[in-house]
Length: 211
Image 1: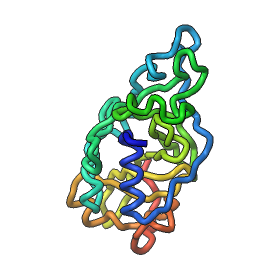
Image 2 (image 1 turned 90 degrees about the vertical axis):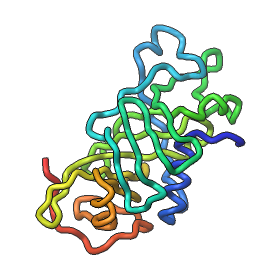
Image 3 (image 1 turned 120 degrees about the horizontal axis):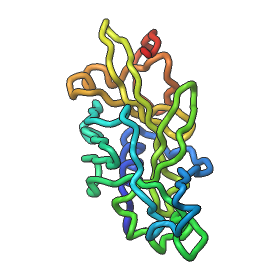
Image 4 (image 1 turned 30 degrees about the vertical axis):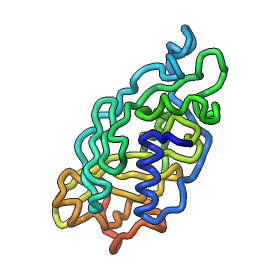
């Protein structure tokens, strides 16, 4: 496929840099919009912008400069790690007149999804609630990432950490509120999280998440 949307590029970059071969693929669980049952879905299946949780919004830093910074706003994800700098997150429905979701269209409409991502239903994985977003195009079944944020206490400090994981809830990247914190603690393994084998961390930090 000639054109990739931001999630395909972000995921590929993150997985390549972390040494992960691929993301665990599960059945896609798109957010269902009431509008989809009353009227035809939006053009190309993009029904409306999805409002991302306030808990994951902000500017986030990773110890790897190629993954940082990542900015998450109300409905948009901006990243420096690909040529496609931003993408809007949508509630995605079936493409009008086809009875199919965009990722079931085998590349026919991919050019319309360069700056689009899909929102999925939140998932409970490894004891945490994760926000899942992924590409809209026909790479959707292979790509997708989950995000959760909570406080971790380390060296006497309570730090807000944004964890990025695959569909099984295994962390392959973690982000902090400043570049300095990311460089200092980016490789820490927090005891309450489940990490991918490819995550390069240090000793397990024995702490519990702050509520």
